[in-house]
Image (cartoon, rainbow, N blue to C red; front, top):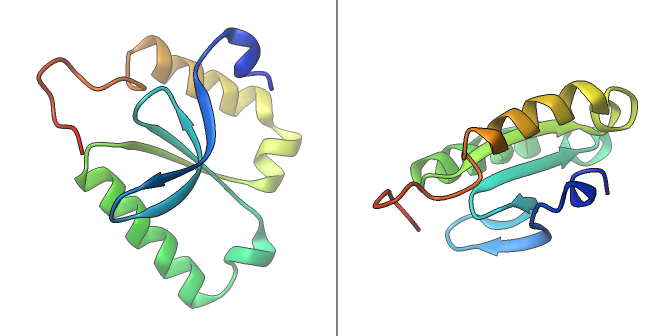
Length: 100
């Protein structure tokens, strides 16, 4: 809600080819993955998350993976990093740059 209040395009559960659904997509290419320990604590889940991050990076996306606790209790710090990336234009595809 706080990102949306800044009038930034934020979509949830976006399907990205070759990756699957991502939790949030800010702009065109900044992926925010929000992980609860319950769903991401197994070795398989842990490895799958890293595989997804690598595939997203290979396709030119920027990924921020945050825990539920970070989002819930320390959002100010992560909002600052997220908005710094937005100010740098990391949420948009570079002109003439790679796109999926």
